[in-house]
Image 1 (cartoon, helix red, strand yellow):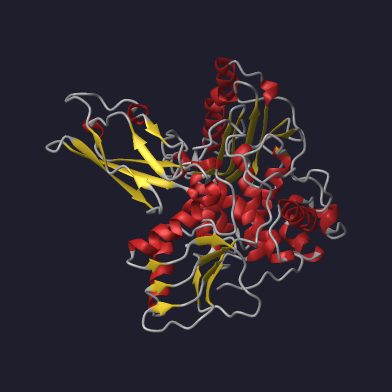
Image 2 (cartoon, one colour):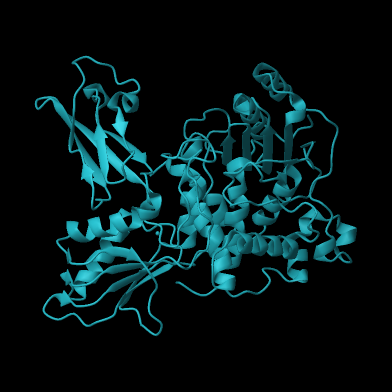
Length: 504
């Protein structure tokens, strides 16, 4: 579901569109005679049900996958909405969209926050450094930055050293109070607590709470060197692992390592690494995710030669203390690109919670759902087809939205000032992101967000057809055998891309 791997301004909480502006943005979805008298809140649905006919290639692929036609809901409609849909099959049926739900979160954020929005991570000192020593505490206040990765944590620590701090005679205090989220069980969703996609959001999210291990074989020495990012302290990290017998195939090299991650302060390997694999990287979410930020901060500080007499602990910034400096994130447009191209769940949840933080001063899931719900009503009118949001990322069994609602949103996005940023964030078929390995007639001409769960497969976005028309395409399959239906959705994309403008 995920693959692995930057001018702050406060949210101006005005309606994203006035009624008149909504009428203009959605004008192409309303019959011409109705436009003059219908307010935005009364705009007719973008898609109306059509005869239950599917392209033959789609039907055949569903049959091969042993997935009934009724498990699919789909819409193919011109992005400008000037003509009836080419296809509207079970378009009004609510379905779980998996990671396609990220489209709702990212589009809402682009409109509500603006593509230039950034996150700040301020750093405070409660004493003046003297002779390279700070006799006091350093406070780092997390405010939801989704991309405080290793390189930017290094920059933060370098900025601290530039303040004249070499020795901290006190503590480093992490303030994570900007988010108020319930306790998180990383293994609850699918029993895979070490998978990075199960990481929980955090006001001070460091490197996605993930440890990246790089294995580099040295055949002459007979072992593979292991490097770790970020450096964690305190931790015992095994520096080498023996190589497998000469000629051993790469195969399932992760299983062959027999890794032990049970102890958050220790990484050990009981197995071997095949030299045939060459250089490989493995990203895991270590045990004790709540303590990850502290270990990463201390590890990076010591890696840069800094000394600490106290500890790294959680706490609050004292009232009235002014920041010594601040580290700024990449712009939202870049963050949205990372989210949608690579389907990063924890980054999406960070963004979702930021919507609530900017409005109410604290990031909660209830607050974020309220913000997106209000935006949907203001943007699209009646709330009957509003998405049922959980954590904003689609990593959920409860999320629901209809193909019709998503198609209408994507049509509105096409007419929105945020369209370039949203479209540029979507994986391109056969080129990059989660669709880089998908080939066919649509290669290079379809920008689509993918979604996959155990019982869901989905795609939604834009397809540039041979006729020159730009189509909105939404396809959602909910079934126990849904992943096997991916070829059916790909066939639908091919069908849309093959349109020449002639009557079918």
